[in-house]
Length: 222
Image (cartoon, rainbow, N blue to C red; front, side):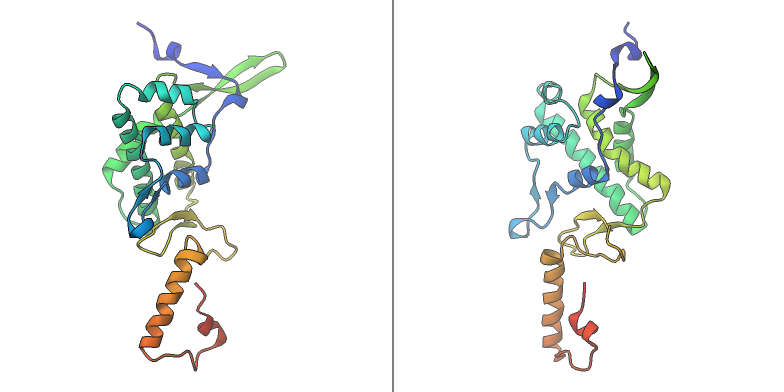
């Protein structure tokens, strides 16, 4: 019987596929809830789309992903989508300060078990740090790389600038890197601007033309 250790492969440190929090958010946002006609639009509707997305970000080798997906492409894609949904659920629960769905936790914990593990390696000059990869499940390992930055941020308590777009039809997730930390919208030219227009029209209907307010209030910054 082959041991798990012997099934794994070790690569030098410079071969490690890495992802940051932005990559994690990019995956979550591949579903645009406020798409054309107000309907959700999925940027990863087919296995080929998801394979290209993961491989294009150097999270896994394309040939390995295709080999793993080929026996059951529908189930493979469902796994990617389920992880994406679980990441959104954890993000939203963190932002909203509520209990997270247990199924989302179970999905991410299973994925995280396939994350890369550091390993010391002797070199001619002394010692280096390599990483042990799970050669048997490249998809889970790629998804683990995407989940790890979110888990790291939660563990460090570094979630104070986690945001969800204030447009309930959009709910784009992002990290607020603005100086004041008061960003509410995914984009002021889209959701933020639409909110301003709605508030302006509401005031007009209520007979409020802005008189009597300070210039800052009249500008109504989002």
